[in-house]
Length: 471
Picture 1: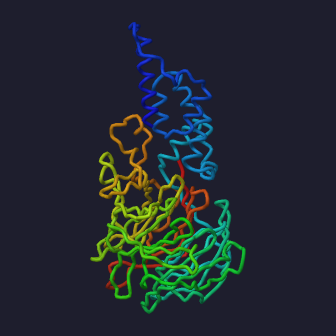
Picture 2: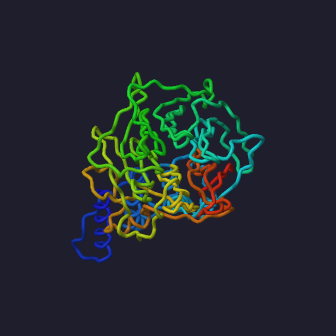
């Protein structure tokens, strides 16, 4: 980046020397002596901000920096080939690949579509597990009316077209035992489930594995024998941690208190073992939060309900790339207004979409009023509050780089909603399609008929929706 800016400055000086006719002038930049193919080969490796800055130095470099093939490569590099292929073709037809890049960066809206569920489908529920694996969507357990738990597992092929119906198949009942508020994580093509709460209020600490969802074996759950295990809990959150690892954080323990510990299960070990992850700083204890893997060995925590029942909207990153894991709190840069952030909430969903960003949907506030808003969180645009770690690059937030900021990422962005949005909800399930371009949402708690002496009504939902990202 610094080398490119130096080249850019040299080129500006060269142009000034040529235009001013001032005798001495600056020496011709070495970069200007390269052929167009050689310059483009360099641009292919540069950050977007550097490409934009480079294109402003002279007419020739601007033409090279605007090359459609270059921006087609940048789109694939930044957003992934599957997401680019799934993106609407209108940008490619009207404005070329640079327009497509801008559309995918500055997401504006989501479009809602309700799926028809054929024959049998999972009953109404909330606090269940919902994951996408091997071209299928799987739902397990949850709670339903009357505080009862569920113990069924359902699988359906991921829909390829919005107009397609979804055909569910129930593959097992009773194993594992019924529960809600558990964590369920995809590790390669296996599902790993931990903990949860049954309808007697008992917190669990068992670990289960299902290897057959992908179709390579029997679709059944097996109790995983582990050397050690985290304390019993429910309403915690977990996600993939890279290298066949599962990470969980927080939840509500057997004593009813909220937890603030971090644990990692390494499936590459034999026998598998849970290890507590000790860090100098950690988020405050909470439940109903989300933990989302963003690539490598990094995961993002958002929101939840704290020890005093307060509802939170802080953002933390757990970095396990080094020998010494660390939690780092992130916030938006000073250039982004404070009000451009979601209100505190718990029971929301947080789903990884293309570009390493996270889509936040729904949840409930401190008064248990359910939400229906949609936000995009971009951890790469965050500013670290305090930590010795440098796990998240912050070059996009440098206020002195006005040129690069033209295509800088935003930490938070609220999206408009098109179509017919579903009822506001919390503790629903959500998972992304392989492209990271669309998200499936199933179930959850929704506003229902208000009962006598109650401040709000409550219903459980069994509808399946697709939330599709659009320009």
